[in-house]
Length: 78
Image 1 (cartoon, rainbow, N blue to C red):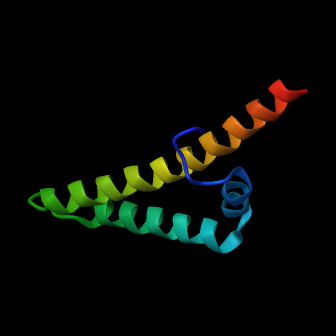
Image 2 (image 1 turned 180 degrees about the vertical axis):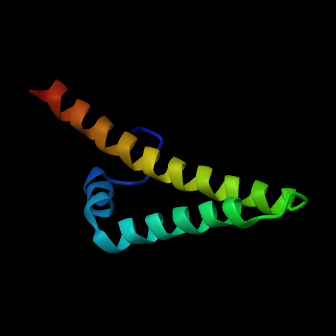
């Protein structure tokens, strides 16, 4: 990925790192709990939880994109 400062090896490390994956899972689950346990009038609270979930998804997608870009570059070199 040309516009990323993250190296593919670092992205792969994070994808395989159990602690990092557990962190993402816990953040995701905590935000789902916010949705499940929020009152009808707690719109801002749900919006914040939604934004956090989207950010976690973006982080994972970005790591995937970095690894994929590196894989494509390696494939083109062969």
